Structure formats: C-alpha cells, structure tokens
Image (cartoon, rainbow, N blue to C red; front, top):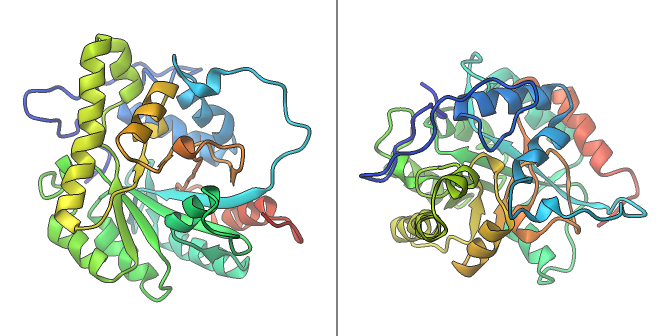
Length: 313
C-alpha cells in the first residue's frame, strides 16, 4: 500500500486536484502529480541535487524565495538538520519507502556522529529567542503523512532511543485510507510521550497549484480551511496544541506563509535538502528528504558536513 497515492481523500464535495501530469525534463514542481513529484524528489536526493530541485517548489508566484538578493558573504552556520521520512518496509515499494536495513544504518549514523536528536519545539524556541542554545549537531526527526508503517515498523525501531519525533498528519486519511494509521495508533504513539502530532493540512492538496486554479476569494477560503480544519481536528483529538505545519509537497509561497502565521502556526516546514540556518524563515524551514538511496554513510556525511568540528550555532 502506498502512503502517497495518486488520489488523496478530499473534503466531501471537493476534488483534490492531484491528477497525473507529464514527465518533464525540467519539472515545474507546482504542476506535477503527486506520484511524478515524488519520483523527481527522490531522484534528486539520490543524485545530491535535492537542494536546487526541491527549493524550486517554493519558487512560485507570491513566493518569498523569488526575491533576488546578493549572496551572503559567508554561509550562516547550521542550527539543525531536519530529516523528513514517509514510510518504511522490508523492500522498496515506491520512491518514498526507506527499507528497514537502510533505516538501521541511519540510526547508527546519527549515533556515530554524536548528533543530538532534539524536539522540533526546541529548534523553534531557539529561533524565537526563547532557548539560549541547541546541543551540538542538533537533528530533528519528522515523519509525514501518517502511513501505517510508522506505527508498525518505525516506532518499534526507534523505541530504544527515546528520541523525540514529530509526525505531520493530514486528518482526512486517518482511520479512512487503507494505507494510513488509525486514530488509536496515533493515540498510542502520543501516550509514549515522545511523539508530537502536528498538521500536514486537512487532505494534503497542492496549495500552490490551487492558488493558480481558483479565484483569489475562493482560494483564500479553501487554503484557510485546509490550515484551520486540520489544526482544529488534531487539537480536539489529542488535547495538545498544534503549532507546526508541514507544507504538502514542500510547496509554499509568501501569501501562504503569512496565512500560516495568521491562523496560529509558529513554524512551518518545507523541503530543500539543506541544513536549517538563521537565514531560513520560520514558516519555511528546510528539511532533508530521506529516501532509500540515502545510505547510512551518506547521512553520516550530511551530518558531519553540516556541523564541522568546532562549529557552533
């Protein structure tokens, strides 16, 4: 079963806008289908090209990333490395599956590099000036979408670590789609005290595409519903604040960032395959997309290159 099917459960009476699109040599990520987008994203990560390709996801009309500015004189130091997983299995079923053997190597790489896995709340608090400093080689682990292998495979594999994990959930799939967890599974994970349940919009639409296809007034209502309804449902289900959002497909624009702030999200996560630095806006923190082609050795290199010896935030 796939976590990222070509059709995602929409709100009643709405279409999800995720039909198959053409395969493009130079993809416009705002136009691709979910399946095609995932294939491009996984290939880019495997080839080490993820930064330029996935950052293009935010290069849409109204996007803050469209602003042209002179390059900084020096690269800001890394604050944290945010990892983005989706699903797990014995074999690679699709582009977003990480094999258990590969994930075992990832766990070892995190330990061998001396990285410290921190909650997303700590990174955001640090960015807000509410936390004095982060530990050396800070890593944040996130898992998107709520695939059932999160509870069946991932959770048992990280149980011995006591690491904090952030799950980004789109509620329309939970206890509804065959590939997804049920609400009781998420409650069991939350009960461990190590899992934070956060928002991935209500049914994972491509918001940048939807902006192009709807009138400004219709899009404003649609996007606010996606952001607010997910937040409200998750807060009601779990009795905890939902302060963080993961942009579907990593795609956002300046107007969406402003909307996320207005409806109460303290921070939002995108993609980009780069470490998080002080230059990244709170409503578009970059993450590394973790796919099976990212070996344990490669993750080891990503961590050590993000945090050179002696460097500090």
